Structure formats: C-alpha cells, structure tokens
Image 1 (cartoon, rainbow, N blue to C red):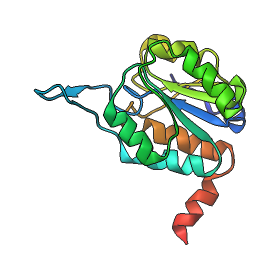
Image 2 (cartoon, rainbow, N blue to C red):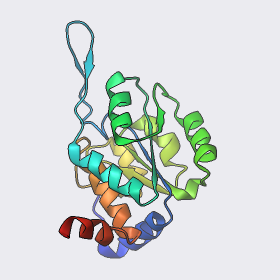
Image 3 (cartoon, rainbow, N blue to C red):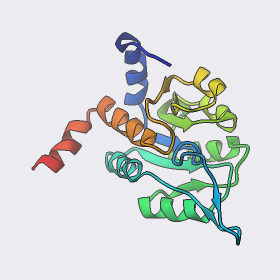
Length: 181
C-alpha cells in the first residue's frame, strides 16, 4: 500500500491522539513462523529493535498491550521483560480483551492503534483510531488498514510503528537526543 506524503497527514493526526498501542504477536512481533521441538516446546523469535521501540514509546506515556489468539510461555516472558502489563493470550475473538483494555487503560477507541497481520485482527482494527498492517499482512487486513509498514512482521515493523508515533507526537527528537549526549 503506497501512501503519498499528502495522504500521511490524516494518519499523523490520528497518531497524535494515541494513548494505547495494541499489538498482535504471531506475524507482528514475530515473523509468524512457529517452531516446536520433539517434546512440543514452542519457540519464537522477537526482534530486539521492536522491543527497544516499545520501551521508548512507553517512556513517553503511551501504553502498550498485546492481544494474541495463541498462548505461549515465550510471549509471557518477552512481554514481562519489556514491562508490558496488559497481555491477553488465547483470545481468538479479540473483542472482549479489547473492550476490557479500553476500560482498564481509560481510553476511547480513537486513542488506540492496533497493529495486525491476519483476519483475527480485523474486529479490533475496524474499531480503533489508527489501524496498522505489517507489510506482509493478509490482503484483506491491508485493505482495512489506515497505514501499512514498510517492514515485515517480526523484522522491525513494530519499531517502525513506535518511531512513527514518537515522531507524530513530537517525542522522537527528545528520545534521540538522550543517545547523542
């Protein structure tokens, strides 16, 4: 999905209002591949830059949550290491978790962004202020997204989203300057 610079302004305006970023896991925080050993243990690979972007975004006051259709101990461990408190796993129908999050965090749907890649994400993506698809998302998800990342899921797409929100909200330069001192 190619977007001209002129078409980005409405997306930037939506990003300025955000107080909560909801992420899917498989295909967004990971590349969507599932690895199992002979004992049935599941392994996932997370991109370090995505994690750092999440930490930077949280430092500016934007909450981050995860809603996943699958349940995985590796997801629980990774989210704990990132300080993400709102983790919903095993929710194939993500609407209940979304509604609970709105109340828990105290935000309206317009103050929420969701990053997804597959059809399970559409019930939330169609209700939030800013719907984002990763570059390799299902075509129907891309069709319903306000914006599509240039990075693939699990390969820096979440960092791209975090950097975009930081820029839209005017925090990127202040974050950058902490590393340039």
